[in-house]
Length: 264
Length: 216
Ligand SMILES: Nc1ncnc2c1ncn2[C@@H]1O[C@H](COP(=O)(O)OP(=O)(O)OP(=O)(O)O)[C@@H](O)[C@H]1O
Ligand SMILES: [Mg+2]
Image 1 (tube, rainbow over the protein chains, first blue to last red):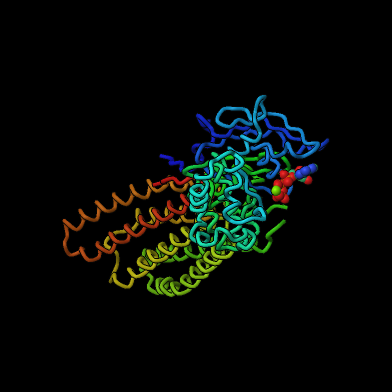
Image 2 (cartoon, protein in one colour):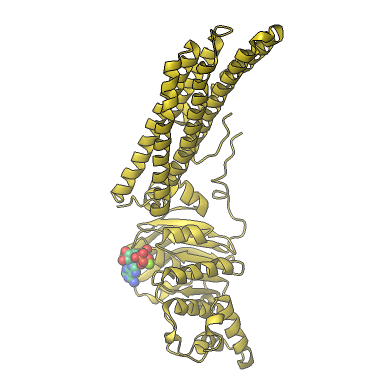
């Protein structure tokens, strides 16, 4: 008689997660910033990470392509597997890893070169032949919903684009090296609502080909674009589940307080 | 605590639905006394109530729409808003049915064709259900909501018994058909009121647990 529309898939283990994090701990020097995080992210899904400033969202997302390796004094324990392979294991090529797991940051950061060259940069480094480059540039710009606005000005400096266009260019640049996972750390925080909604549409389109993890401070954005949501608090993953469950009926009091704005 | 004004608005919304519920309960009880005693004066008081109820309901709707448009409610806040919207529409329907009941005394001349003993019993249960469903909403008491909705069965039983009895009486004596028909409508209205109480109880369960269930 009881029809439970929520709380379904959250407890069942995903058979073959694209990304599987197990007992991840991270320290900056003496200070522990991530505590025993475990999470499974299915392929072709969008996962939103939310939580108050300083709770470790960026730190966590950087673990997924070992960007924290670049930070001095940073120590990681635990396991992050992508397609079943531990990226912190031996014999992992970090350059290959970052090709497979692309990242887009809060502030658009195009290189000071033309639109075309921004996108061609990655494929060139990875040895793509000259005759294939233009095709990749066009396909990447199309996938990032930027082709219409830039096809007649590919030689213009990337920095002449608007902020929202620059951010889509950065997404196109990430797509150009054919990753399977895209990490986005607050990609819309510097953008106006129209550019934001373009990026959101893009994210939902891209998930048919990619697995996406996005950090956002915008709760409505998390609710709109994601399939799964993780709530972080002081370095801990407090709750992880289907987005509709988290925003409809969170299990944890602190999640509820955070998403209803009662926090602090 | 953050968002104090918003939280106050939510509290206020909840309070106004509770007082709306208490007004509706009064209207229903008055209409029942009026129909049993064929008290036209009391019936008119219930009829005059309609405008007041409309105003209250409109006020509740406006604050719900404002909260939805301006505050982006989430989680239990969203559930509160959705359930208050549904509950106030159930309450409005109960007022409508009470008004239908209050119109009966003006149409029945002389006395009733039979003492309204079972009908009164049925109405008392429905009034209890109304009171308790509002109480369950106020205290978010899922157990009370379930227990309240379960009483719908008693109401339905009496409804069918009275229905059959009235049909038999009409078959025997066609001169009472007009008066008996009003009594058929009356039990039907009461039965519908109990159904709306069940809906309110379902909303209470949804509000409290996020589960959508059928209680009748
Ligand atoms: N490079 C670093 N060296 C030392 N401590 C750091 C470093 N980066 C982050 N931290 C600390 O780790 C904790 C988590 O920071 P992080 O940047 O991951 O938070 P966040 O959730 O992304 O916050 P925000 O929403 O403000 O971006 C904070 O206490 C922060 O001060
Ligand atoms: Mg951050």
